[in-house]
Amino acid sequence: MNFDIDAARLHLAEHEMDFLAGSPVVAHCHHFNLFWDQTMDDALGEEAGRRVRTVAAHKSSYRLLQSLADEVGATTPVERLRLAGGVFSAMGHGKLHLAVGRNGGLVRGEQLHYGFGWREKYGGTLTRSAPADAFATGFSAAATEVAYGLDPGSLAGNEERCIVDGSAGCNIRVSANGAEPLLPLGVDPQSARDVLPPPFDGLYEDQIGPVVSGLRDFLSGVAGDERGVIEAFGVLVTAHLADYYNHAANDVLEIIARDKPHGVEAFRGLLLEAGQSCAFHTFGGVLASPEWEGMVGAPTGDPLEVVIGCVSLARAFGFGRWAIEEFEPGKRLVMTSPGTYESLFSRLISADAAQGPGGIFVGAGIGIMQLAHDVTWVPRPSIDGALYLELARTNPWHVEQDSSFAGGDVLDRIVVTRR
Image (cartoon, rainbow, N blue to C red; front, top):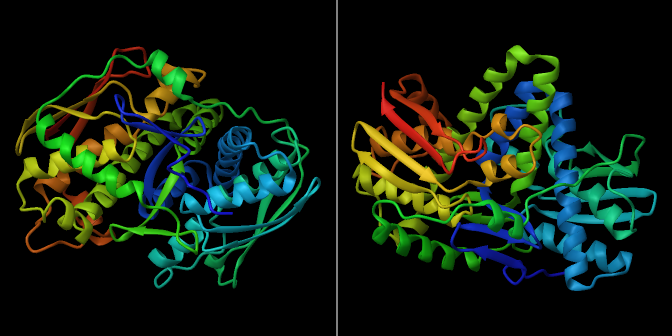
C-alpha cells in the first residue's frame, strides 16, 4: 500500500516541529541512528539495550499506528496491516511483509534501515552477530496489535535473523508476551501548543528563513523508494518517530538511576556525544552534499555560513526552532530554542522532567562549532568517522546549558566556548 506521508503530516511552523497522525517525527540519518542505538547499548549492555530500544519502538509505533488507522478509517486487519507496511516504507525504514494473525506470526524484512545502514557503513570492516533492527521489531509487534485490536504489550517481537550477521534477509517473530502492558505515551500537537512558549527570533533570521523554506520544499517530495529506502544528501534518511529516541533515553536513564546511580552523569555524557555526532555527521554530511550545493551553494569555509546552515537544517528536520542568540567566530556560540523535540517530551512525559535525558541540542553545539572552525571546506571534505575521531581527540570546544525548558525554565539555552 502506497502511503502519502506528506498528506498525513502536520507542521507546527511557529515551533518548527512535525507530526504524523499526532506523533512527532524528525529526520535523522543512518549515521546518527546507528550511533544512538549503540549509545543505549553502551549504557546498559547489548542485550538490555536492545530490549529497551525494542520496547521504545513498540510504544511509539503503537501510538502512531492506532491514530493513523483511526484517521484514515482502516478498520479490518488486512487494511491496518497494509497501512502499517505502507507508512513504514514511506518513512524510509525498508519493507515489512507482515504474515501475522491475532497470536502473532512471522515478519520478513527487506532493506531494514538499521541492518541495511549498518552493513553499508561497517560491513567491510566489522563483524556483528547481534541483530540491528530493534525499531522494526517493536514496530512489527505494534502493527499486529493494532491490526487485531489488541492491547499494547499483548505481543512482543524478536528478530531471529538479520543481514548484519551474514543472513540473506531479516526475520522477526511476533508472539504472545507475558510482560506487563505498555503505556504508549507521547507528545501530541495540542499539548505542544499548550506548553511551548511563544516563538522568538534570533540573529540572521533573514538568511535562515529562506534556507529552511527551500529545505522543506525539497524534503516534501522525499519518501521511501520501491525498496522503502530514502537516499538523500549522501546518507540514508528516515522520517523517524521522535518519541522512539525519547522513550529509549528516558527508560535507560530510569534504569541507571535505579540500579547504578553513580553512572547517571556518564550516561548524560554519552547522550551529549550523540548530539555532537548528529551535528557532525548529519549536518556536516548535508553541507558537503551535491544537493546542498545545488540549493544553497557549496560551503566557502566562512564559520558564520556553516552555523547558519546547521541551524537551518535543525529547523527543517523538525528538531525545534533553534535560534542564534550570539556568535563570535572562533570564540563563542549561544543558541536558544523555545523547546526541542527532546525537552518537550521530558517536560510533558518524563517522571522527573528536571532530570530528563536531553543531549541532541546541547551536544550539537560542539558539533556545529567543530564544523564551523575545524573542518576545511575547500576542497569539499569527506565527513566521515575518521575525521570525527581526529577532531574529537583535539576538541577545543566546551558547552554548558544554562537554561532548560524540560527543567521548568522558559527556554533551552546553551553556550559553547573555546576551552
